Length: 58
Image (cartoon, rainbow, N blue to C red):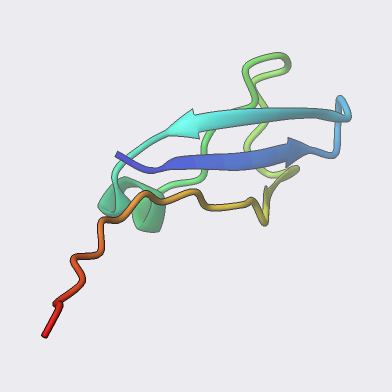
């Protein structure tokens, strides 16, 4: 499941939330500190992926 980063403008605290893409599209999370939903904004975060690449030798 993806990890999303948010910031609460009311209490000025960043927080992360693990939720499915569907959950993310359907609701705004509550701030864990003040329980606010209207003052929560999504933050842009980095993505880390690991891939394998197979090389073909001719």
